[in-house]
Each structure stands twice: as structure tokens, then as C-alpha cells.
Image 1 (tube, one colour):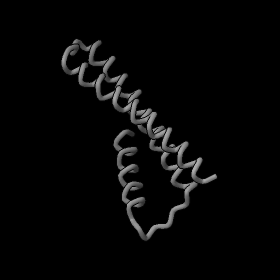
Image 2: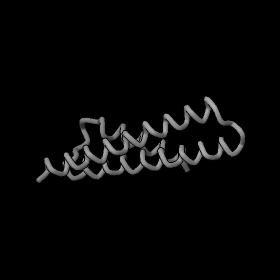
Image 3: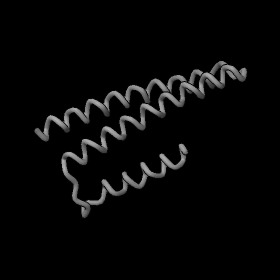
Image 4: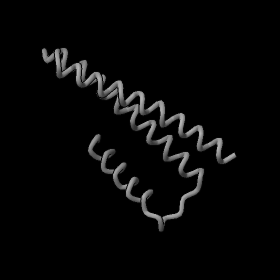
Length: 92
């Protein structure tokens, strides 16, 4: 499922970059909120991976790295949510 979400995000990204495809501010807000939700899910998933790694005896640098990436993703998710709010404000 994660692979499908990633592929869908790539396709959406390509569509958004195409100057020939019209977009509305509302659509951009929805896309940004969707990206925020996706990144939040990724951060939560990495927290689960980190828990699994620890339980499987792989504590140390590997879990530290997974934790750091998860923290960064959580930060990006919050920033995307803020961006979505700014887009919504621009639409009003």
C-alpha cells in the first residue's frame, strides 16, 4: 500500500508541474492538505517501524536514524498543514 501511495504522489506531482493543466486555489489547498495527511501517516509509520526495530533487537544507530527521519517528517507535516491554511486564507 505504501508503494501505491508513493506512486500516486509522484503522478500527482507530475500533474501539478504541468503548466497545461489548470488548477484552482481550492484544488491546491486540497492537495496541500492531502500531502500533509500523507506525510503525517509516513511519520506515524516510521514510529511503528522504529518500535518494531527496537523490539527486534536493532536498537542503536538504526533506530536513531529512523527516529530522526520520523521527527523530520512530523515537522514537514505540520508545515504543510500551515501552508494549506495560508492557501485557504489567500482564497478568501
